[in-house]
Every structure is written in C-alpha cells, then in structure tokens.
Image (cartoon, rainbow, N blue to C red; front, side):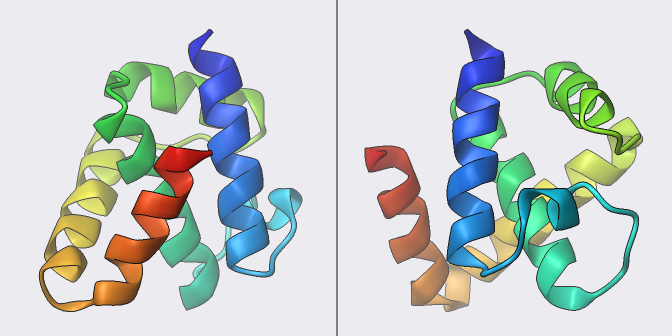
Amino acid sequence: MKAEIFNSYATAIAQEFNITEEDLFTKTKRRHIVDARYLLYFACFERPMRVVYIQEYMKERGYKVAHSNVLHGIGEIEKRLEYDRDYNKLLVKLKKN
C-alpha cells in the first residue's frame, strides 16, 4: 500500500518538475532534480511514511540513500515552505491526487 503512494508521488513530482522518473532516481547533484527528490521525501514523510520505507522504495528504484540524507531533504523542504508559496501550492496539489 505504501509503495503505491510512493510511486504515485514519484510520478506526480517528476511531472511537476518536468523530469523523468528515471532522473529522480539518478545520482546527480543537479539542483532541480535534488529539489524534486527532497520534495518526494517530504511528501512521503508527511503521509506519514517511515524514513526506512522511503529508503527501501528509493533503493528498489536504484537510488540508495542514507537515513540522514532523507532527514536532511525533509528539513530543507520544511525551511523552503516558510518562504516559498509555490511549494505550498505544489504540496496541496500532490495531496489531492
């Protein structure tokens, strides 16, 4: 059940950021892809989904990520939500789907 939620978020976020799902799970430091990945972590965590599940689903898609990196990404999105209304709108849109 949680895997379906993860996959639907991954698809929606990739579309919103105009990237492929494959890009989302590629080791890269390109800012827009990292931002999309962080948003995926945050959306799943808010669902609520445990960090270990997020790690597991990321690994299934070929992207191994440390627990601390997931938490860092979640924290970055929390900070961004304080000043960027576009992220708030995007999260509302994701939750509706």
